[in-house]
Length: 273
Ligand SMILES: [Zn+2]
Image (spheres, rainbow, N blue to C red):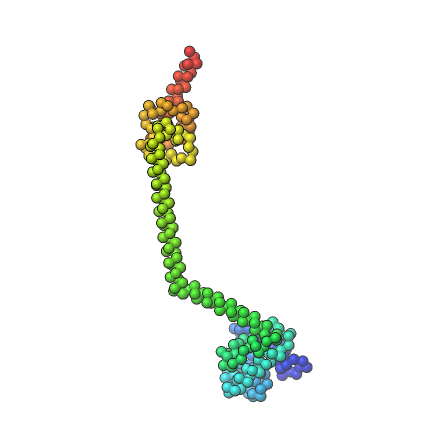
């Protein structure tokens, strides 16, 4: 290892890694950052007097640690944590720092060593990195829990239940709307039936909100005598309203047209007399 005037032994490893352009990318799936990880674990072991043979230093970092006794293992883990504690601020936010923390964290689960990393690193550049990583882990856990809850059979069953309830509600709403429309139509027809013929014709002619197609045929006057009291403006409006409708409406329109024609003929003969 190169000697350095400032910083601790771990700074020296990081400088070497940078100079040698070793990969330090967290969770690198191509090389697993093997060279870099071997280097800092070997250096940590060296700090606590654990000898790493040439053969050991060439193996996977995980196997390197497994070759140690339990005591050597724990001492090496603690040495690496101490190295992090003394790391210079210039390594803040680097991949290398993240990769070291990933190898340690969480110490109890990863290495069986009872260390609270956050407390050990408190107030150091490494602790900021650790906090960021823990926050990220936490959000991943929350998201996973949310997804698992969403995908649980209970949740799926509940969503189906809600969907069924919504469908049933929509169906019964449609039914009650249909019922309401039918009731309104029956009430309207009953009201029309109560009107005199002339009042009814006037309603047909003048109420533009009123749908002529809802009227049952028996309410459409069909005798010429029914039109006796019909006033000319109402008759004109009624023809307009009936338009091109056929059947009973067509017959009524023709009757009204004849009536108007007869009226105008009698008027013009009056003028000529
Ligand atoms: Zn890599």
